[in-house]
Structure formats: C-alpha cells, structure tokens
Length: 342
Image (cartoon, rainbow, N blue to C red; front, side, top):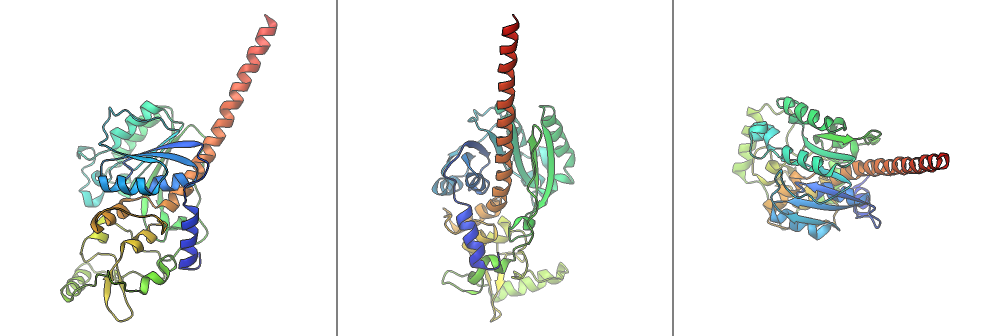
C-alpha cells in the first residue's frame, strides 16, 4: 500500500460482501456495521442489532445482512447464528466515560453473555476499549471466568490496529472464546501512513471544508502549552493517525482531528477522510447528520481489521465442521461394527 490510490483500491475491492456466505454472524451493538462489513467480506451473512436509527440506516444501506433497530436486554430472543460478535458499550470502561464499570447502566456485557448462553456458538468475539484491562480488569476477569465456565477457551489480545494495515494508532481489546484451535491474525509487514491512506484528499480544500477560526487557533495554542504537548496535534501524514474518537472528530476541541495546509490554515477532517483512516471503503455511504456520521465512524471497529479477524473465524469454523463430520462418520462406523457383532 504505497499510495492513497493503492490503499483505497485495496479496501474498496477487498471489503465488498462476499458472493458465497456459508456462515452467519450475529452482531450485537452493531453501530453502523464496521465489524459486520469485515465479516461479510470474509463470507458471513450478518444480522445486526442496534438501537440508533441512523446507524441501522447506514448498515442496511451498505450490507447484505439486516440490522434490526431495537434495544437489547438479557431476555432478548436472539436470532440463531454460527458466531456471536459485537462491541458491548465501552463508556462504562473508558477514561472518557468515567470508568464506572458494571455500575453504569450502559454496561452491555450481561447482554452479550446472555446471547452466548442461549445460542451456544462454537466461537464468539467481542471488542472493547483498552481501559477494560486496567482499572476495571476485575470485571474483565469475572466475565472471562463466566465464559470459561461455559466450556470456552478464552484468549485476550490488546491490539494496535496500525499493525494490521489500518492507518491509525488505535488500541483496542479483542477477546475470543472458542472450543480450541482458533488462531488470531498476525501483524502485517508494514504500517500505512495517514498520507498514504488519504492520498490527494489530504491537501485539498473542498467547499464544505471547515477552517479553524482565529479564536480556535488561540485556544489550541493554549491547550497544547498547558498539556505540554510535545508533538502538535495536526495530522502527521507520514505516520498513522492518532486514534479517531467521536469527541475529536465531531467536537471543536483542542484535541480535534485536523489538517494543517501548506498556507498555514487548519481545517477539520471531513467525514470521507475520517472514514478512510478508519478503513471504510469509499463506496460505503453514511446516513445522518454530519455529527451522527462522525459518531458512527468514531465508534466503529475498523472494517479492514474486522476482515482479517473474520477470515480466521471462518478458518476455525471450517476446521470445526471437519472435526464434527469426522466424529459423525466415526460414530456411524462404531454403530455398524456393534450391529454386526450382535
């Protein structure tokens, strides 16, 4: 991926929903469908469940699967699927969400656990913020213990998506439950810089561009001085971008994602640029207001990483199918042998 056009062409073609979809995936707290998009590209037909209308509209506009607009709860009648995936709301465990953990009403883990108990898939995967491994690690440990009690092998991975071809330094926790034999995707050989991902988009100023005002420039200077910011927060096109969040995409803060042009002016990122840095293909269309779109992008699992994860999940399910078929054949052979002895 040496240039923006190369990077764009890769994700534009690679992340299209597959023609054959032998497996099904249930995506809980699906958002706009970043995780589901990667799974559909790898051969899973997805069903998403999401409470926000704009997210469901985006999901249904772009994916083969269907997003159900509904509020999840522990007694929900979950549709059957080969794998349960999702990102339980992370606000209870993020620094920005005050880290109230299980005391927070937004905690989605009881719902995810309920889905696994009811559907009994041979594999499940959830994504969450890295903060779950620190102040609230007791809660992660409790959740993993409960999952292990259901017979699963549980693997935890703190992943920086920049090592998987996503042009962004974004660390997230990935937890996988399986029945043995799942292999987590390895890091790719090279990282993708923000400039390589954005290409010509970065230095253009389309009519819809929003430039920082003099008062905002003054605020940013004070913010960086007070926070002892060693490196300016302007987008460095030679490196992967900083983590994209709802706050630094949609909010006019000192930490906002922004581009400094050659003439010295700064402008905020446009939705399409943010989508590139989150590895959404250019053909993926977002629905809603600009603020809603930024929230969809900032909350999403990067589809390109999701695709790599889904490929490994598909390999695992293929191998499980062979094991189960072999077991069934051996069972029939034993029955035949026993019958001839009677």
